[in-house]
Amino acid sequence: MKKGAYAILLLLVLGGAYFLGAWSTGRSAPTQSTIAARKILYYVDPMHPAYKSDKPGIAPDCGMELVPVYEDGSMGGATGNPGMSPGTVNVSSERQQLIGVRVAIVKSAPAQHTLRVLGRVAPDETRIYRVNSATDGWVKEILPFTTGSLVQADELLATFYSPAFFSGIKAYLYGMRSLDRFTASRKETKEQLELTGDNIEGYRNTLRNLGMTDHQLDEIAQTRQTPDTIEIRAPAAGFILARNISPGQRFEKGTELYRIADLATVWIVAETYETEASSFKPGMQVRVTAPHVNKTFSARVAKVPPRFDPASRTLQVRLEADNPGLLLRPDMFVDVELPVKLAPTMTVPADAVVDSGVKTIVYVDKGNGVFEPRKVETGWRAGDQVEIVKGLMVGEKIVVSGTFLIDSESRMKAAAAGIYGETSEDPVCGMEVDQTKAKAAARMSDFRGQSYYFCSDECKVAFDKEPMRYAAKVSKGAATEAGKRLEHVQWADSQEKPHTDAAHQGRAHPTANPASGVSHR
Image (spheres, rainbow, N blue to C red):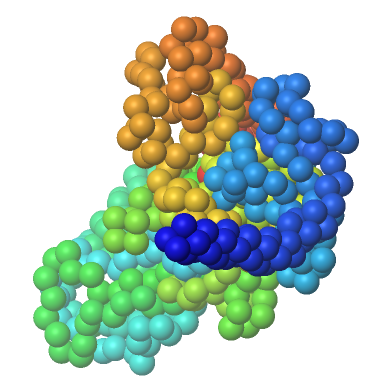
Protein backbone atom coordinates (compact mmCIF):
# COMPACT_ATOMS: atom_id res chain seq x y z
CA MET A 1 0.00 0.00 0.00
CA LYS A 2 2.80 2.36 0.93
CA LYS A 3 4.74 1.47 -2.21
CA GLY A 4 1.73 2.33 -4.36
CA ALA A 5 1.37 5.71 -2.65
CA TYR A 6 5.05 6.50 -3.21
CA ALA A 7 4.76 5.54 -6.88
CA ILE A 8 1.74 7.80 -7.40
CA LEU A 9 3.54 10.70 -5.63
CA LEU A 10 6.63 10.21 -7.81
CA LEU A 11 4.54 10.26 -10.99
CA LEU A 12 2.87 13.47 -9.88
CA VAL A 13 6.24 15.15 -9.21
CA LEU A 14 7.66 14.10 -12.58
CA GLY A 15 4.55 15.27 -14.40
CA GLY A 16 4.65 18.66 -12.70
CA ALA A 17 8.30 19.09 -13.62
CA TYR A 18 7.57 18.24 -17.26
CA PHE A 19 4.71 20.71 -17.58
CA LEU A 20 6.74 23.44 -15.81
CA GLY A 21 9.65 22.98 -18.24
CA ALA A 22 7.34 23.06 -21.25
CA TRP A 23 5.70 26.25 -20.02
CA SER A 24 9.09 27.87 -19.44
CA THR A 25 10.30 26.89 -22.90
CA GLY A 26 7.19 28.33 -24.47
CA ARG A 27 7.67 31.61 -22.59
CA SER A 28 11.29 31.97 -23.64
CA ALA A 29 10.84 30.95 -27.26
CA PRO A 30 9.77 34.41 -28.50
CA THR A 31 12.82 35.99 -26.85
CA GLN A 32 15.18 33.60 -28.58
CA SER A 33 13.44 34.14 -31.87
CA THR A 34 13.63 37.88 -31.38
CA ILE A 35 17.36 37.69 -30.77
CA ALA A 36 17.80 35.49 -33.79
CA ALA A 37 15.75 37.95 -35.81
CA ARG A 38 18.35 40.70 -35.24
CA LYS A 39 20.48 40.25 -38.32
CA ILE A 40 24.20 40.94 -38.02
CA LEU A 41 25.47 43.00 -40.95
CA TYR A 42 29.20 42.82 -40.20
CA TYR A 43 31.78 43.04 -37.44
CA VAL A 44 33.90 46.09 -36.63
CA ASP A 45 37.02 46.94 -34.68
CA PRO A 46 35.82 48.59 -31.42
CA MET A 47 38.80 50.95 -31.51
CA HIS A 48 38.46 51.80 -35.21
CA PRO A 49 34.92 51.21 -36.55
CA ALA A 50 36.14 51.86 -40.10
CA TYR A 51 37.62 48.34 -40.07
CA LYS A 52 34.94 45.83 -41.09
CA SER A 53 34.83 42.04 -41.26
CA ASP A 54 32.14 39.62 -42.40
CA LYS A 55 32.92 37.21 -39.58
CA PRO A 56 33.84 37.46 -35.90
CA GLY A 57 37.43 37.45 -34.81
CA ILE A 58 40.22 39.55 -33.33
CA ALA A 59 41.05 43.12 -34.45
CA PRO A 60 44.48 43.22 -36.14
CA ASP A 61 45.60 46.50 -34.56
CA CYS A 62 44.64 46.36 -30.88
CA GLY A 63 44.02 42.64 -30.36
CA MET A 64 40.46 43.21 -29.10
CA GLU A 65 37.48 41.10 -30.08
CA LEU A 66 35.41 42.36 -33.00
CA VAL A 67 31.90 43.47 -32.12
CA PRO A 68 28.79 42.93 -34.26
CA VAL A 69 26.84 45.67 -35.98
CA TYR A 70 23.13 44.90 -36.36
CA GLU A 71 20.82 46.02 -39.13
CA ASP A 72 19.16 48.56 -36.83
CA GLY A 73 22.48 50.35 -36.46
CA SER A 74 23.20 49.23 -32.88
CA MET A 75 26.45 47.57 -31.89
CA GLY A 76 27.11 44.61 -29.68
CA GLY A 77 29.01 44.59 -26.44
CA ALA A 78 28.19 45.34 -22.86
CA THR A 79 28.18 49.10 -23.31
CA GLY A 80 27.42 49.22 -27.02
CA ASN A 81 30.86 50.56 -28.05
CA PRO A 82 33.53 48.77 -26.03
CA GLY A 83 37.06 50.10 -26.38
CA MET A 84 36.00 53.65 -27.16
CA SER A 85 35.84 56.72 -24.99
CA PRO A 86 33.25 56.63 -22.23
CA GLY A 87 30.07 58.26 -23.46
CA THR A 88 30.43 57.09 -27.06
CA VAL A 89 26.98 56.85 -28.61
CA ASN A 90 25.52 55.16 -31.65
CA VAL A 91 22.86 57.09 -33.57
CA SER A 92 21.10 55.61 -36.56
CA SER A 93 20.80 57.62 -39.76
CA GLU A 94 17.05 58.04 -39.19
CA ARG A 95 17.62 59.56 -35.75
CA GLN A 96 20.38 61.79 -37.12
CA GLN A 97 17.97 63.25 -39.63
CA LEU A 98 15.33 63.64 -36.94
CA ILE A 99 17.53 65.63 -34.53
CA GLY A 100 19.37 67.51 -37.29
CA VAL A 101 22.86 66.09 -36.89
CA ARG A 102 25.34 67.59 -39.33
CA VAL A 103 29.06 66.83 -39.55
CA ALA A 104 31.98 68.71 -41.10
CA ILE A 105 35.63 67.98 -41.82
CA VAL A 106 38.25 69.62 -39.61
CA LYS A 107 40.46 71.92 -41.69
CA SER A 108 43.42 74.20 -41.13
CA ALA A 109 43.30 77.51 -42.97
CA PRO A 110 44.03 81.22 -42.46
CA ALA A 111 41.33 82.94 -40.46
CA GLN A 112 40.03 86.48 -40.62
CA HIS A 113 37.55 88.23 -38.40
CA THR A 114 36.55 91.71 -37.32
CA LEU A 115 37.43 92.74 -33.79
CA ARG A 116 34.80 95.05 -32.34
CA VAL A 117 35.40 97.02 -29.13
CA LEU A 118 33.97 100.07 -27.41
CA GLY A 119 35.78 103.40 -27.64
CA ARG A 120 35.49 106.70 -25.79
CA VAL A 121 36.34 110.09 -27.31
CA ALA A 122 38.89 112.17 -25.39
CA PRO A 123 40.56 115.51 -26.22
CA ASP A 124 44.11 115.40 -27.56
CA GLU A 125 46.33 116.34 -24.62
CA THR A 126 48.74 118.12 -26.97
CA ARG A 127 45.85 120.40 -28.05
CA ILE A 128 44.55 121.37 -24.61
CA TYR A 129 45.26 124.99 -23.64
CA ARG A 130 45.16 126.14 -20.02
CA VAL A 131 44.81 129.86 -19.42
CA ASN A 132 46.53 130.48 -16.06
CA SER A 133 47.06 133.73 -14.21
CA ALA A 134 50.69 134.88 -13.90
CA THR A 135 49.79 137.53 -11.27
CA ASP A 136 47.18 138.29 -8.66
CA GLY A 137 44.13 140.17 -9.88
CA TRP A 138 40.40 140.89 -9.86
CA VAL A 139 37.90 139.88 -12.51
CA LYS A 140 36.18 142.89 -14.05
CA GLU A 141 34.04 141.54 -16.92
CA ILE A 142 33.15 138.08 -18.29
CA LEU A 143 31.65 137.41 -21.68
CA PRO A 144 28.84 134.81 -21.90
CA PHE A 145 31.05 131.83 -22.75
CA THR A 146 30.49 128.82 -20.50
CA THR A 147 31.69 125.23 -20.35
CA GLY A 148 30.96 123.56 -23.70
CA SER A 149 30.96 126.82 -25.70
CA LEU A 150 32.83 126.92 -28.99
CA VAL A 151 35.23 129.86 -29.28
CA GLN A 152 37.55 131.11 -32.00
CA ALA A 153 41.22 131.97 -31.72
CA ASP A 154 41.86 135.38 -30.05
CA GLU A 155 38.19 135.75 -29.13
CA LEU A 156 37.72 137.88 -26.00
CA LEU A 157 36.68 135.83 -22.94
CA ALA A 158 37.04 138.20 -19.95
CA THR A 159 38.92 141.20 -18.53
CA PHE A 160 40.65 141.72 -15.18
CA TYR A 161 42.62 144.33 -13.23
CA SER A 162 46.14 143.78 -11.91
CA PRO A 163 48.62 146.47 -10.79
CA ALA A 164 51.55 144.25 -11.77
CA PHE A 165 50.99 145.09 -15.45
CA PHE A 166 51.16 148.86 -15.34
CA SER A 167 54.87 149.31 -14.73
CA GLY A 168 55.55 147.11 -17.71
CA ILE A 169 52.97 148.95 -19.81
CA LYS A 170 54.61 152.32 -18.97
CA ALA A 171 58.02 150.98 -19.97
CA TYR A 172 56.56 149.65 -23.22
CA LEU A 173 54.91 153.02 -24.01
CA TYR A 174 58.15 154.89 -23.17
CA GLY A 175 60.04 152.73 -25.63
CA MET A 176 57.42 153.24 -28.32
CA ARG A 177 57.48 157.06 -27.85
CA SER A 178 61.27 157.09 -27.92
CA LEU A 179 61.20 155.24 -31.21
CA ASP A 180 58.69 157.76 -32.53
CA ARG A 181 61.04 160.68 -31.62
CA PHE A 182 64.05 159.01 -33.15
CA THR A 183 62.15 158.32 -36.33
CA ALA A 184 60.86 161.88 -36.55
CA SER A 185 64.23 163.60 -35.88
CA ARG A 186 66.23 161.34 -38.18
CA LYS A 187 69.35 162.19 -36.17
CA GLU A 188 69.77 158.87 -34.38
CA THR A 189 72.22 156.33 -35.65
CA LYS A 190 71.26 152.90 -36.90
CA GLU A 191 72.69 151.31 -33.76
CA GLN A 192 70.50 153.50 -31.50
CA LEU A 193 67.40 152.59 -33.47
CA GLU A 194 68.19 148.88 -33.27
CA LEU A 195 68.83 149.17 -29.51
CA THR A 196 65.50 150.95 -29.00
CA GLY A 197 63.72 148.29 -31.05
CA ASP A 198 65.30 145.54 -28.95
CA ASN A 199 64.17 147.27 -25.77
CA ILE A 200 60.60 147.52 -27.08
CA GLU A 201 60.58 143.79 -27.93
CA GLY A 202 61.85 143.05 -24.43
CA TYR A 203 59.00 145.05 -22.90
CA ARG A 204 56.51 143.14 -25.09
CA ASN A 205 57.94 139.81 -23.91
CA THR A 206 57.65 140.90 -20.27
CA LEU A 207 53.99 141.82 -20.69
CA ARG A 208 53.34 138.66 -22.75
CA ASN A 209 54.80 136.51 -19.94
CA LEU A 210 52.49 138.22 -17.47
CA GLY A 211 49.51 137.13 -19.56
CA MET A 212 48.84 140.01 -21.95
CA THR A 213 47.87 138.92 -25.45
CA ASP A 214 49.56 140.07 -28.66
CA HIS A 215 46.19 141.48 -29.72
CA GLN A 216 46.18 143.95 -26.80
CA LEU A 217 49.89 144.72 -27.17
CA ASP A 218 49.32 145.70 -30.79
CA GLU A 219 46.37 147.86 -29.70
CA ILE A 220 48.57 149.69 -27.15
CA ALA A 221 51.21 150.26 -29.84
CA GLN A 222 48.60 151.81 -32.10
CA THR A 223 46.77 154.00 -29.56
CA ARG A 224 49.77 154.81 -27.31
CA GLN A 225 47.27 154.63 -24.42
CA THR A 226 47.38 152.71 -21.14
CA PRO A 227 44.40 150.29 -20.87
CA ASP A 228 42.32 150.13 -17.72
CA THR A 229 41.98 146.32 -17.75
CA ILE A 230 43.83 143.33 -19.13
CA GLU A 231 42.12 141.10 -21.64
CA ILE A 232 41.83 137.30 -21.53
CA ARG A 233 41.52 135.86 -25.03
CA ALA A 234 41.23 132.32 -26.37
CA PRO A 235 44.67 130.96 -27.31
CA ALA A 236 43.16 128.70 -30.02
CA ALA A 237 39.84 127.70 -31.54
CA GLY A 238 38.07 124.98 -29.57
CA PHE A 239 35.61 124.06 -26.86
CA ILE A 240 35.74 125.42 -23.33
CA LEU A 241 36.27 122.45 -21.05
CA ALA A 242 36.36 124.46 -17.82
CA ARG A 243 35.63 128.04 -16.67
CA ASN A 244 36.77 128.85 -13.12
CA ILE A 245 36.10 132.60 -12.74
CA SER A 246 33.11 134.84 -12.10
CA PRO A 247 32.63 138.66 -12.10
CA GLY A 248 34.35 140.44 -9.21
CA GLN A 249 36.31 137.34 -8.21
CA ARG A 250 39.80 137.80 -6.81
CA PHE A 251 42.29 135.24 -8.03
CA GLU A 252 45.85 134.45 -7.11
CA LYS A 253 48.92 133.79 -9.17
CA GLY A 254 48.79 130.34 -10.83
CA THR A 255 44.98 130.03 -10.85
CA GLU A 256 43.53 128.20 -13.87
CA LEU A 257 41.01 130.57 -15.40
CA TYR A 258 39.96 128.68 -18.55
CA ARG A 259 40.72 125.32 -20.13
CA ILE A 260 40.14 125.07 -23.89
CA ALA A 261 40.52 122.02 -26.14
CA ASP A 262 41.14 122.10 -29.87
CA LEU A 263 38.98 119.24 -31.21
CA ALA A 264 40.22 119.29 -34.80
CA THR A 265 42.04 116.09 -33.83
CA VAL A 266 40.81 113.87 -30.99
CA TRP A 267 41.87 110.71 -29.19
CA ILE A 268 39.73 107.60 -29.02
CA VAL A 269 40.45 105.32 -26.09
CA ALA A 270 39.53 101.75 -27.07
CA GLU A 271 39.09 99.34 -24.16
CA THR A 272 40.25 95.82 -25.02
CA TYR A 273 41.05 92.57 -23.26
CA GLU A 274 44.69 91.64 -22.85
CA THR A 275 44.42 88.99 -25.58
CA GLU A 276 42.99 91.54 -28.03
CA ALA A 277 45.40 94.42 -27.43
CA SER A 278 48.18 92.72 -29.43
CA SER A 279 46.04 93.06 -32.58
CA PHE A 280 46.32 96.86 -32.42
CA LYS A 281 49.70 97.74 -33.93
CA PRO A 282 51.09 101.31 -34.18
CA GLY A 283 50.16 103.03 -37.42
CA MET A 284 47.35 100.62 -38.24
CA GLN A 285 44.15 102.12 -39.66
CA VAL A 286 41.00 101.43 -37.63
CA ARG A 287 37.38 102.09 -38.51
CA VAL A 288 35.41 104.19 -36.03
CA THR A 289 31.62 104.60 -36.17
CA ALA A 290 29.67 107.22 -34.24
CA PRO A 291 26.17 105.72 -33.83
CA HIS A 292 24.53 108.97 -32.76
CA VAL A 293 25.31 110.66 -36.11
CA ASN A 294 25.67 107.51 -38.22
CA LYS A 295 29.10 108.64 -39.44
CA THR A 296 32.27 106.65 -40.02
CA PHE A 297 35.78 107.94 -39.32
CA SER A 298 39.27 106.59 -39.89
CA ALA A 299 41.65 106.48 -36.94
CA ARG A 300 45.30 105.54 -36.49
CA VAL A 301 46.74 103.47 -33.65
CA ALA A 302 49.12 105.67 -31.66
CA LYS A 303 52.71 104.66 -30.98
CA VAL A 304 52.25 104.76 -27.21
CA PRO A 305 51.78 101.32 -25.61
CA PRO A 306 48.35 100.39 -24.21
CA ARG A 307 47.64 101.53 -20.66
CA PHE A 308 46.16 99.13 -18.10
CA ASP A 309 43.04 100.31 -16.29
CA PRO A 310 42.77 98.62 -12.86
CA ALA A 311 39.10 99.59 -12.50
CA SER A 312 37.83 97.85 -15.65
CA ARG A 313 40.70 95.32 -15.84
CA THR A 314 41.23 96.20 -19.50
CA LEU A 315 44.01 97.59 -21.67
CA GLN A 316 43.27 101.01 -23.13
CA VAL A 317 44.57 101.50 -26.66
CA ARG A 318 44.92 105.07 -27.89
CA LEU A 319 43.70 105.96 -31.38
CA GLU A 320 44.14 109.30 -33.16
CA ALA A 321 41.39 110.56 -35.46
CA ASP A 322 40.69 113.70 -37.46
CA ASN A 323 37.41 115.32 -36.49
CA PRO A 324 35.83 117.09 -39.48
CA GLY A 325 32.84 119.16 -38.50
CA LEU A 326 33.74 118.63 -34.81
CA LEU A 327 31.17 115.83 -34.61
CA LEU A 328 33.18 113.87 -32.05
CA ARG A 329 32.94 115.45 -28.60
CA PRO A 330 34.76 114.46 -25.40
CA ASP A 331 33.29 111.46 -23.51
CA MET A 332 31.20 110.29 -26.47
CA PHE A 333 31.10 106.51 -27.04
CA VAL A 334 31.94 105.10 -30.47
CA ASP A 335 32.29 101.65 -32.05
CA VAL A 336 35.79 100.56 -33.06
CA GLU A 337 36.24 97.87 -35.72
CA LEU A 338 39.57 96.28 -36.62
CA PRO A 339 40.00 93.57 -39.29
CA VAL A 340 42.34 90.88 -37.95
CA LYS A 341 44.12 88.27 -40.06
CA LEU A 342 45.30 85.15 -38.25
CA ALA A 343 47.89 82.58 -39.29
CA PRO A 344 46.66 79.22 -40.62
CA THR A 345 45.31 77.23 -37.72
CA MET A 346 42.80 74.50 -36.93
CA THR A 347 39.36 75.96 -36.31
CA VAL A 348 35.89 74.52 -35.78
CA PRO A 349 32.43 76.13 -35.52
CA ALA A 350 31.59 77.35 -32.02
CA ASP A 351 28.45 75.14 -32.02
CA ALA A 352 30.68 72.05 -32.26
CA VAL A 353 32.36 72.76 -28.92
CA VAL A 354 30.70 71.72 -25.66
CA ASP A 355 32.23 73.52 -22.67
CA SER A 356 31.11 72.10 -19.32
CA GLY A 357 33.36 74.40 -17.32
CA VAL A 358 35.56 71.45 -16.31
CA LYS A 359 36.51 70.23 -19.76
CA THR A 360 35.87 71.07 -23.39
CA ILE A 361 34.85 68.34 -25.82
CA VAL A 362 33.76 67.83 -29.41
CA TYR A 363 32.07 64.77 -30.88
CA VAL A 364 34.05 62.92 -33.54
CA ASP A 365 32.20 60.98 -36.22
CA LYS A 366 33.82 57.51 -36.21
CA GLY A 367 31.56 56.23 -38.98
CA ASN A 368 28.52 53.96 -39.00
CA GLY A 369 26.61 56.34 -36.75
CA VAL A 370 29.20 56.20 -33.95
CA PHE A 371 30.05 59.51 -32.24
CA GLU A 372 32.92 59.62 -29.77
CA PRO A 373 33.46 62.47 -27.28
CA ARG A 374 36.95 63.95 -27.63
CA LYS A 375 38.56 66.23 -25.07
CA VAL A 376 40.19 69.25 -26.74
CA GLU A 377 42.05 72.40 -25.80
CA THR A 378 40.82 75.64 -27.34
CA GLY A 379 42.60 78.90 -28.15
CA TRP A 380 41.09 82.11 -29.43
CA ARG A 381 37.39 82.52 -30.13
CA ALA A 382 36.39 84.88 -32.95
CA GLY A 383 32.79 85.17 -34.05
CA ASP A 384 31.46 81.68 -34.73
CA GLN A 385 34.90 80.06 -34.97
CA VAL A 386 37.03 78.52 -32.20
CA GLU A 387 40.69 77.59 -32.47
CA ILE A 388 41.60 74.00 -31.53
CA VAL A 389 45.05 73.79 -29.98
CA LYS A 390 45.06 70.11 -29.09
CA GLY A 391 42.82 67.06 -29.40
CA LEU A 392 41.85 66.94 -33.09
CA MET A 393 43.55 66.13 -36.35
CA VAL A 394 43.01 67.70 -39.75
CA GLY A 395 40.67 65.52 -41.81
CA GLU A 396 38.58 64.16 -38.93
CA LYS A 397 34.81 64.61 -39.02
CA ILE A 398 33.06 66.27 -36.11
CA VAL A 399 29.47 67.11 -35.22
CA VAL A 400 28.67 70.76 -35.92
CA SER A 401 24.88 70.67 -35.55
CA GLY A 402 22.71 68.73 -33.12
CA THR A 403 25.60 68.64 -30.65
CA PHE A 404 23.42 69.34 -27.63
CA LEU A 405 21.23 66.25 -28.09
CA ILE A 406 24.18 63.98 -28.74
CA ASP A 407 25.95 65.40 -25.69
CA SER A 408 22.88 64.74 -23.53
CA GLU A 409 22.70 61.11 -24.63
CA SER A 410 26.46 60.75 -24.16
CA ARG A 411 26.27 62.01 -20.59
CA MET A 412 23.42 59.65 -19.73
CA LYS A 413 25.29 56.72 -21.24
CA ALA A 414 28.47 57.54 -19.35
CA ALA A 415 26.50 57.88 -16.11
CA ALA A 416 24.76 54.54 -16.73
CA ALA A 417 28.17 52.93 -17.18
CA GLY A 418 29.27 54.35 -13.84
CA ILE A 419 31.75 56.84 -15.27
CA TYR A 420 31.69 60.16 -13.52
CA GLY A 421 35.32 61.23 -13.08
CA GLU A 422 38.06 62.51 -15.36
CA THR A 423 39.23 60.17 -18.11
CA SER A 424 42.59 59.66 -19.77
CA GLU A 425 44.00 57.50 -22.53
CA ASP A 426 45.53 54.13 -21.72
CA PRO A 427 49.08 54.45 -23.13
CA VAL A 428 49.16 50.74 -24.02
CA CYS A 429 45.86 50.05 -25.81
CA GLY A 430 44.61 53.60 -26.35
CA MET A 431 41.28 53.16 -24.53
CA GLU A 432 39.75 55.94 -22.48
CA VAL A 433 39.98 55.09 -18.77
CA ASP A 434 38.10 56.51 -15.80
CA GLN A 435 40.93 57.76 -13.61
CA THR A 436 38.98 57.32 -10.37
CA LYS A 437 38.14 53.68 -11.09
CA ALA A 438 41.65 52.89 -12.33
CA LYS A 439 43.15 54.39 -9.20
CA ALA A 440 40.77 52.46 -6.95
CA ALA A 441 41.69 49.22 -8.76
CA ALA A 442 45.42 49.98 -8.40
CA ARG A 443 45.81 50.22 -12.18
CA MET A 444 47.97 53.31 -12.14
CA SER A 445 51.71 53.86 -12.59
CA ASP A 446 53.93 56.92 -12.15
CA PHE A 447 56.79 57.49 -14.53
CA ARG A 448 59.03 60.58 -14.56
CA GLY A 449 56.57 62.69 -12.60
CA GLN A 450 53.51 61.80 -14.68
CA SER A 451 50.65 59.45 -13.81
CA TYR A 452 49.34 56.87 -16.29
CA TYR A 453 46.06 54.98 -15.96
CA PHE A 454 45.16 51.57 -17.42
CA CYS A 455 41.99 49.73 -18.35
CA SER A 456 43.28 46.30 -17.28
CA ASP A 457 46.02 44.64 -15.27
CA GLU A 458 47.56 43.33 -18.51
CA CYS A 459 48.05 46.85 -19.85
CA LYS A 460 49.61 47.96 -16.56
CA VAL A 461 52.03 45.02 -16.60
CA ALA A 462 52.99 45.78 -20.20
CA PHE A 463 53.64 49.42 -19.32
CA ASP A 464 55.69 48.61 -16.23
CA LYS A 465 57.93 46.33 -18.32
CA GLU A 466 58.64 48.95 -20.99
CA PRO A 467 57.63 52.38 -19.64
CA MET A 468 59.91 54.27 -22.02
CA ARG A 469 58.22 52.73 -25.06
CA TYR A 470 54.67 53.68 -24.15
CA ALA A 471 55.52 57.02 -22.50
CA ALA A 472 57.44 58.01 -25.63
CA LYS A 473 54.37 57.23 -27.74
CA VAL A 474 52.26 59.63 -25.66
CA SER A 475 55.00 62.28 -25.72
CA LYS A 476 55.33 61.93 -29.47
CA GLY A 477 51.65 62.73 -29.94
CA ALA A 478 51.93 65.82 -27.76
CA ALA A 479 55.10 66.89 -29.56
CA THR A 480 53.33 66.58 -32.91
CA GLU A 481 50.62 68.99 -31.74
CA ALA A 482 53.25 71.38 -30.36
CA GLY A 483 55.20 71.19 -33.62
CA LYS A 484 52.13 72.15 -35.60
CA ARG A 485 51.55 75.06 -33.26
CA LEU A 486 55.17 76.23 -33.67
CA GLU A 487 54.86 76.09 -37.46
CA HIS A 488 51.84 78.39 -37.28
CA VAL A 489 53.75 80.87 -35.11
CA GLN A 490 56.77 80.80 -37.44
CA TRP A 491 54.47 81.40 -40.40
CA ALA A 492 52.99 84.44 -38.67
CA ASP A 493 56.49 85.77 -37.89
CA SER A 494 57.54 85.35 -41.52
CA GLN A 495 54.60 87.48 -42.63
CA GLU A 496 55.98 90.42 -40.62
CA LYS A 497 59.40 90.44 -42.33
CA PRO A 498 58.41 92.94 -45.05
CA HIS A 499 57.24 95.33 -42.32
CA THR A 500 60.59 94.99 -40.55
CA ASP A 501 62.34 96.01 -43.75
CA ALA A 502 60.06 99.00 -43.99
CA ALA A 503 61.01 99.97 -40.46
CA HIS A 504 64.68 99.98 -41.50
CA GLN A 505 63.74 102.48 -44.21
CA GLY A 506 62.33 104.85 -41.62
CA ARG A 507 58.72 103.69 -41.40
CA ALA A 508 58.01 102.50 -37.88
CA HIS A 509 56.18 99.20 -37.69
CA PRO A 510 55.29 96.92 -34.80
CA THR A 511 57.03 93.71 -33.98
CA ALA A 512 55.06 90.55 -34.72
CA ASN A 513 53.27 89.15 -31.73
CA PRO A 514 52.54 85.42 -32.06
CA ALA A 515 50.26 85.33 -29.06
CA SER A 516 47.14 83.35 -29.86
CA GLY A 517 44.59 84.99 -27.79
CA VAL A 518 41.56 86.03 -29.45
CA SER A 519 38.90 86.36 -27.13
CA HIS A 520 35.62 85.62 -27.87
CA ARG A 521 33.19 87.31 -25.62
